[in-house]
Length: 327
Image (cartoon, rainbow, N blue to C red; front, side, top):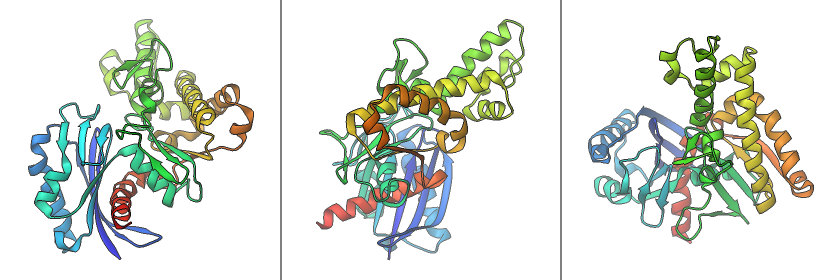
């Protein structure tokens, strides 16, 4: 049984995990979550400190580990282990994580785009298990796609395949991936919050009440969760916001279905937490936009690994990397 260190790099949180890995299971032994490292110059201090703390908690040293896997949003040069750019951490430009971590821990280090990493995890252990053609959508702070095609991860020629969130759904709309009207702008957690901030501003400036925001000074505190809480309590405006997000999500998935003829679309984060609010409008849009035959062959599912998909994903990066090297 191998022990692997996984590092999940997100826009608001980082997490480091150590797991026991066998041929058919991953057992997360311990995990530490902490605020994102905004400046890559702080990696050696902040990240190393958390990794060392985790190892100490388990009475392990780096020599007990087989490899390090890193999952990170953005454009990743997976062949060389470099973060080219990540929209959620704008100061991270051409950061060579493989070099930084292998030098410190003397281990093989593998780096993948987070959507790709989650796709591998969901394919091996989650909602896509048993399929050969599936897509994973991150649907967290941002939104991206990981593609499993013909039984293998598809990264494209430079590792940037699957940038679903960057595709433009409308000429105008909320900004995501630096592009107004993108799918990330409409469907991600930050996109839902952006839609809600606009509606709250409309209501409050008209002298009306807003269930998820009680004053103009509180607008920046709106989140996808606070809007979901209001929607689940029956607030019509909040329900409409999620219906808008669900509609755009469905439009995007319809394109993936028609283009790739996939068996499974697995969706993480916001969809796992608010499937009841997103699915009706999403399914209506898919029925309206996708061709009937490929639509009938595709299942849309919440991530089978649920809220743990990010931890599994970072570990799966190392599993996948070690597997490729052994062939």
